[in-house]
Length: 295
Image (cartoon, rainbow, N blue to C red):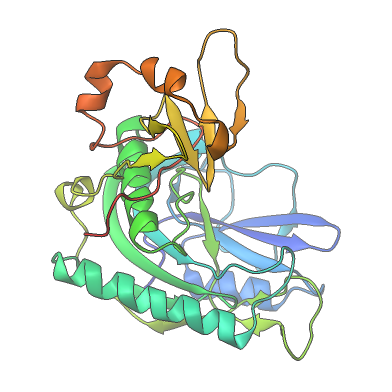
């Protein structure tokens, strides 16, 4: 069983820049990274399949410096859903053992929750600083598929706050397991670690219907004297703890402190949108709402 089912880009972050190679053999990709002469910071692969010109060689022995990398239009098909649980910590450092263990506990909770909804078993992977669950999917590279993945991850983030809701774009990268995670300085408390595959998952794919069962649930934010309904585009959003105004005539976009949310903003939200406020809500920039309740 392998993580590669077609061509993937492998991207290495060197001290002096980025190097890339294209592989349809996971072991060959790992050998190329392990042969790297520099003390690289991290190595990744594209979750989804890449469409390449026939002239580009596959499975090279080493990676090549490049300023170009694959984009959305280069993705042939979506084949993996990454549920990435990374513990909160100061920027630019490795996690402590205690922080990483908290991510592990939450990953176990996500796995049990999805198992209860008849999802297949995922690949369970140690990313070095956190934990990954990789579920097989089979979706086209389309706007509708992106919105489906985006909504599912947003809902999981509401239920399990360590889930990274931003891993929905088609050319998304994932840790190349077996490579080093070197973020910041290596210390006894926050060491560099090797990533690894802990458990291999099922060959069964998560169906599109199972993914579409997940929609982020908006909530009503109550301030000291007013109520604001969080709706999404054109209304008031909740984005990582800060309300945001969008599309209001005469006002600039930007953070809006909770204490300043007033009824005048709520009145500008169409009543028809309020009726659908408990359905999928997500603006194009990726702002997501907190859950009203855990289900």
